[in-house]
Length: 121
Image (tube, rainbow, N blue to C red; front, side, top):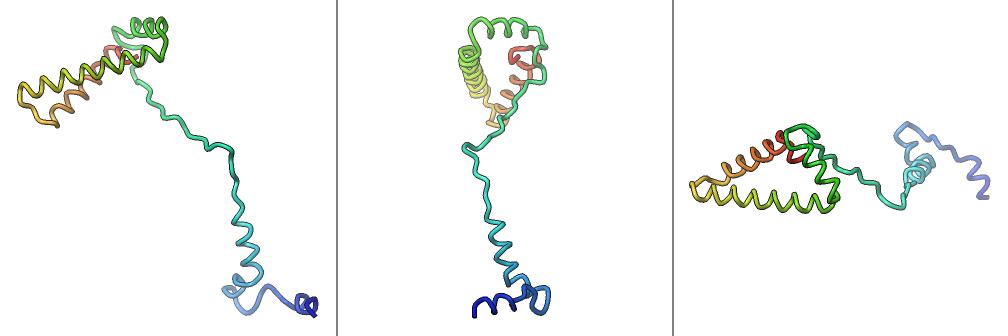
């Protein structure tokens, strides 16, 4: 009895909208549930490249120092130097009464100058 029902059953009944709710709907729903699972999500590494890399008066000295002491240690020292320089700029801004926006502009200007001189090579 079940086979006669399945044999006479059609996937299209009436109009286009109603055919989506029949067997086609479930076939479509099952096929859209397929997920590809990778063992580890792949993240793109951010690219923070210096446009003036290798250029500037101090770039050769910076590159030699980085090669001598190693990239990791070099980046630690450079990070500390940048932090100290930012503190100097902050103290300068306090002494002349500059607001936070002016302080941020001075820090951005210091970064731009450091890039052009080759300190960030």
